[in-house]
Length: 250
Image (tube, rainbow, N blue to C red):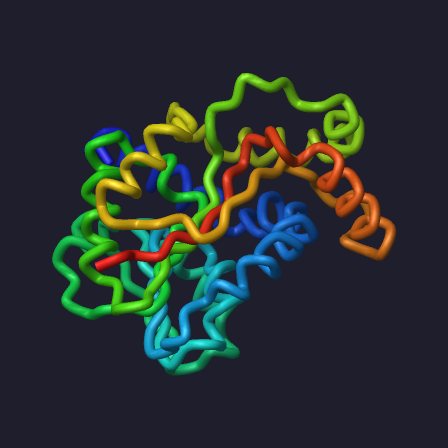
């Protein structure tokens, strides 16, 4: 990240860290669990090490870390890593928490990984920084290793009325998140440019799908799960969140 933006982003995430799971991760968990369950079939055969880049409070390590012998979580926000430590106590000594600039880490790290997760992180980067991260990840993946990501993308399609109706009760909580510490200005990823950047660095998409944000209304109970599954099935094709798994072809 550019210096000023990186500082603003770190300050923002340090400020919201104690509230991040309740206001951001938990309301999205039903949809996230539904989609990441689909990506699980693309996990690599090798299970020696996982790298969680821009790990935040560790929700990706919580989902997939138990499959791996070693899990490194890297983030430039001490506040977010503090929450991650609490969330990932069950992983014990296999989880390692690294407070570092993520771009510098991926360029200097000498460890190689079977899985690299970049979820909700890549859109924080300028185009040249995205290229550096993808190049670094390509060098750090073991043969057969994969990159798992989920990021907001630019879409010309308006949010479907059904999605807007379902999400309406959740908007006050999301507004509270933004009020805690206004995030720095950022742009969503351009889908075509990001696919080209992946291809240029030897990645082949083996799974991709899109989705609209769909928040829980009833604490994630069976009604939430059934309704979110139905709305997602109807509306997801032009969604603003792009989920994918990319395998690096040496």
